Image 1: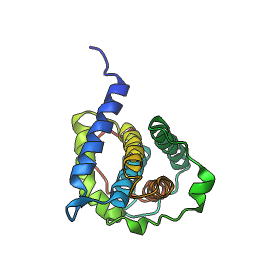
Image 2: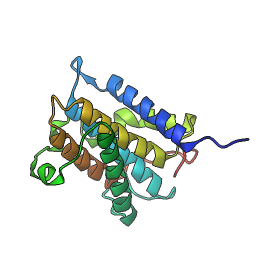
Image 3: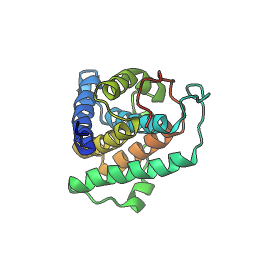
Image 4: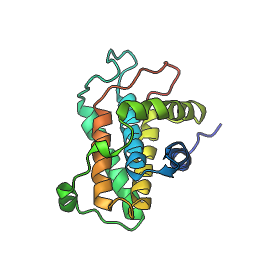
Length: 186
């Protein structure tokens, strides 16, 4: 039996997460750019951290997690985000981005609320597709880039990128709730 092409899984996951985030994150009858972008980025970081934590991890939800591998994975997610934006015609100016302010408080959901709302969707998709947590993280990072592009008229591109990067860092350094061991772990 032939193995599924991981690029197909990634592409399908990007389409799925992009669609579901836009449907589930309607607030007061409208999509809120900061919430969309921060949520996609937070789920990228959450799934990345899940792919790095051992199954017998003793971290409680909300605990601070410092893993060297998280820094490396964070750089991969940033590269994926950058690739998405490049594919959509944008070149990032990190000097300009560094001068922006985009506090995570602009999102109408914090990290815990984002996870509570979106964890079931991401975890079920991983179980059913089957998709690894690592691939889910990369797909969500790519979707984050798409959302930044699509929301650029309401939220300047540089602010969207800064918000996304802050949300990724926050979530890859904060333990999520544990999941059962039948869920893919890498």
